[in-house]
Length: 148
Image (cartoon, rainbow, N blue to C red; front, side, top):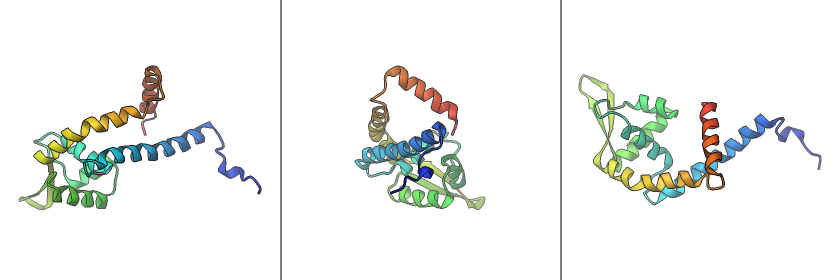
């Protein structure tokens, strides 16, 4: 069979991009395995974390959540429905403008984060087990510099 050079990365930058893409899948898989114990996916967990890190007096609207997380509004709506059904968030319609909805995390949502976060952070830390502390710090610096 003839080798197809189009499938070989043309340069180091393309190879790095390919490796980052493969790693991103592995990272999501590892996080989802960890969070499965808590019956929540990484995407829903990220939404809860966003709400946790938002000021209490500044509840978010679904469109703002979509923008922050870089996902479609339809995806946010599905996640919000699930999170609300599991009593992890509340959605409140604004009386002055019935089209607006504020989303806030509930006490049950806080409880879930308190239980899951130590496991989440340990899984994140384990991703760099094959690196030295210096390599880990340098990789972090370079990835932040990429600003993707």
